[in-house]
Length: 345
Image 1: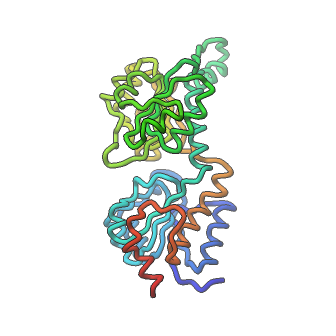
Image 2 (image 1 turned 180 degrees about the vertical axis):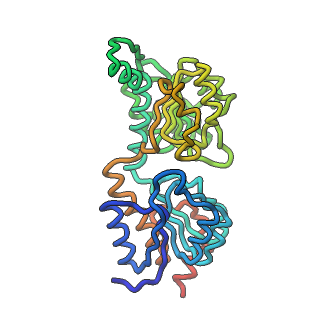
Image 3 (image 1 turned 45 degrees about the vertical axis):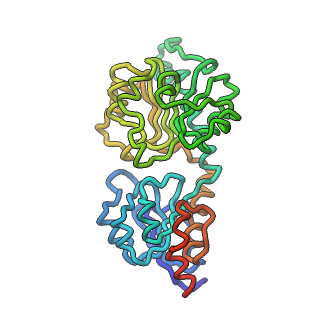
């Protein structure tokens, strides 16, 4: 076993075989491991003061989607070389501050993640179109032939974001003979056209779509991208599907639209915060037949559970050794990265 030279914090320990392999790899790489609290509910989310105390003597962090890493938290860790994120989204890490402080941020955008999320989004659409949740409820109550679904064929699907997940959703939906629109200011029309997708404004997408499916990362500019104004543009028969991030939608405006019947329904795998408060109107019994709620599991699969923690671990180990990980979120950091300084000692 390698001599221990690094201290690493796993903020949300991974259980089972994957967790054991993760910890074994870290120890073999010479890491002393500090384990945080297993996630169970909102009560286990760390405060900023908690995190400041925890990172003080750490060289590396292996983090989840629930912790908020502010500039102040990162400044409390003078030895920090890297923050290795489990999953794709890094909106809860101040990446700009990390870059300025010389801390490398990595993530795990592996196919097992985005392929699963794309399939989940399509499953959500089908479940809403075919009214599977109310159908199940009526069937259990003995009310036969009481539910009427609709075709996907001929419908318009609007994709908010056309990156890896959005483009995969488009390809999965092609056999359903739907019309595909997308809003993404970073995508060229030619690329979208090659996938059979028309790039349009957000306003047009909201007005024309029968299904609005979110596949954007969260930035300071697009928080609450879908607010009351945008939702008001939708057809009363239309649905919202969100497998991206809860912060993309004004949840209060969404709940109000659902209660008033201004849209037909919503299928949500993500919320802001997570988990949502029990008092969230989106969880109310009043909206139970108009909503399909799952606990941020769109990307989960046995394949992902086996692979993603190891990719996160490898990102961390490489960075601790002064090597560039496979997946770097902030490549601009490399010129003044603390890991360069350590490698030169």
